[in-house]
Length: 181
Image (tube, rainbow, N blue to C red; front, side):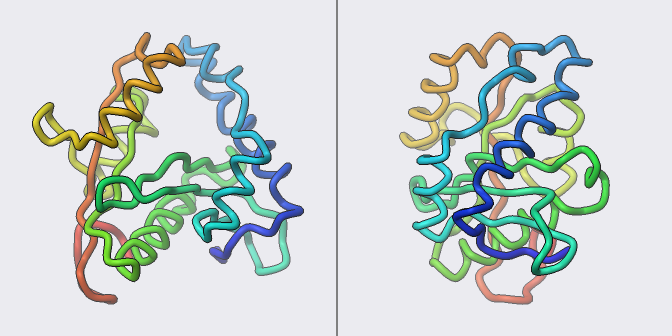
């Protein structure tokens, strides 16, 4: 799988990936999550211009099958969204995107990756835990993570259990750490 920065013309394809990746939530009784709109093109473009929107494709010239957007939050790189098209699921694509984000965080002097996710969805918190993320308890939540959780609650995501998670980033490239690399 080839990880690279997203191209401007690919942003609508990222929205399609998001819609397809949301469909499995329907089978878990979470139709509102399945029907949620993907990030708007201007949001994706903001991340792309900032250098924090990456895609995964079979080859450098192929259309993306997955993407990740992130933003620095309180000394960590916060993964705002990582989505894999179901046809590319269970092939290590999400893991590769997270490893790429971890390398970016390390290069930027950030100490960790953080994210918020559904606690009980198999491809959410349990998956991230297998990759070395750990749940954060109340006192560990930074002001930025508290703000993000409040925004999520305002969008109705708290109808299902949510969790903030963190994985430390190795300090030097090639160092074995909690994230795949």
